[in-house]
Amino acid sequence: WVGGAVAASAAVPSPAPRGGATPHTRLSLLPGIPDLSLFPRSAWSAAQRGVLAELPHASLGYPDPRGLPRLRTAVAQLLVRRRGVVVSPEQVVICSGVSQAMTLLGLVLYARGERTVAAEDPGSPEHAELFAHSGMRTVRIPLDAQGPDLALLREHGVRTLVATPSHQFPSGIAYSARRRAQLLDWARSVDGLVIEDDYDGDFRYDRAPVGALQGLDPDHVAYTGSVSKSLAPGMRLGWVVVPEGLTEAIVARKRLMDLGNPALDQETLARFIERGDYDRHLRRCLRTYRERRNVLLAALARWLPGTDVTGIAAGLHVIAALPPGAGAGPALAERAAELGLSIRPLEAYSSAPPPGGRAHLVIGYAHLAPERIAEAVGLLAQVVRNAQLLRNDQADRGDQGLPAAR
Image (tube, rainbow, N blue to C red; front, side, top):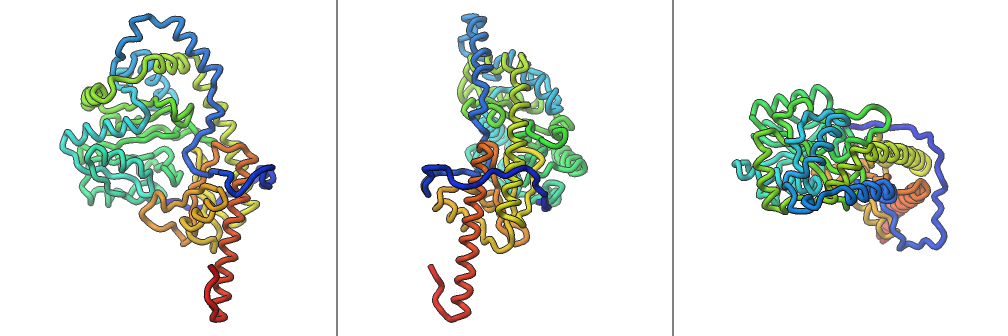
């Protein structure tokens, strides 16, 4: 876990409710949601038309379960160029997103005798759920500011760790160079595997992206990624790059699971990447999300002074440690829901209480227009004020020997 605070400088639009808004109007600050209105419809449509005009009839048959060669080549080149992954097209397996990649890895590891996988704490609960589907149990490994606790990892005796080293979810830290090296030393010492979930590695705003861990040791890292954050989760297109000894086992499981991803979607994504449309789209998203991040930081500074914000350098969310006295995160989430605001406390991702006894929220901002971000933060500030007033009233009544207000 890493602490700290930032100052905000962007202008803050007024958080006054829009006309017609009611307490039932839903505003969401939940993490992990891209702005689907940014989907490049014109460029995607052009790529799709080009594919349909050129695609041979034979290409509409059952696809290669590992993915079409054209897309595997495009993805391999993309990962080498943007993420520093060491990969050839033969090592890329196209999947229905990271969730299928994790499921495939779990099934293959289970078949090879593995029964336990380690996961980050705090971390994504979906990792444990996906590996449970494969019959594997999960142990949680706490983090410090540098990365996972390797002593505890060794103590558990596991040989597999699911990790988000380039932009840890949800804390936002990037594993330090030293901890990365130590983690790979551990993997080599136990002949183990680090499963790298590079869920939003392209979105880094203030400096160059941190390279993929896989690029440092391709023999002990399985790399997963997708277009769910960069294009849209409904695309259901992703990839997994595994050490050579696992590739054929992954492909065999993929063949049994669904015979491969739709050929037209694969061809279209390949053309979209080849023509430079994917890079152009990412640049547009970076500009948009950087602006929204700055609006969020300014809104928090204005409406919730004393809030410490971390994890701001990358991704689609931040961690906000609310001012002392704001109350517990889960209770705030319940009160916010009554006002039509969806928020998620850090407790949803962690087995330990938040540091410092303060409420910590995992706030997503990418999917909201700037004025909606300001509106949502204004509503959050109202929730916090109401909670503080209620506690003050209860304290006063307690001092006077009166029953607490309900």
